[in-house]
Length: 203
Image (tube, one colour):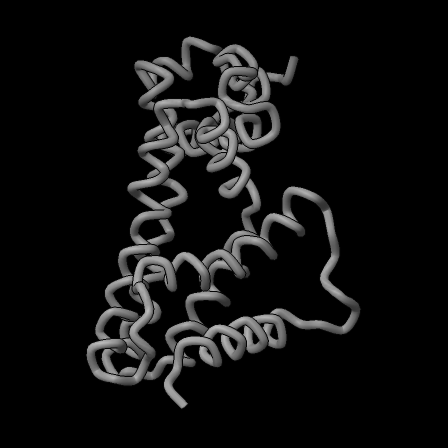
């Protein structure tokens, strides 16, 4: 058992959230107990419940701590307002790839929650997945109406683009595959964007 650490209240809370996210991402939600979280965080189980009355409160705190999606959507706002298709897609893809690479626990938490049928799944879906889907769907719909894109189904087109990005994330983060040698993130993003725009843009 880990030695009990001395933290201030806010520090202890952040440590519990960080540790819980790492363990849930490794063992799943059903396979993790608050006792295990407490031991790994170096606090008592009573301390966990002092900060989080229920497991659901702890889950919600993890989601809030990883609430980067609004930052990602905001980062492409300037390009979207100008109708710069390549910049919108490039920025969105790069942000998703780089953020998951920096914190791979998020994608694992998303999958565990969905596969286990956990109540957290809906929370994750609405706070992370749906926000990106809705943003890109609205953008593609506007570009179709403006005549810049072919008359594609906006929602399906959004899923297709995000699917290319997420497939790469899954290969690297879940299956341990490596990017082809000498292929940088920037080059990967450029290829994904080029393939997508070739399919949706009018000649």
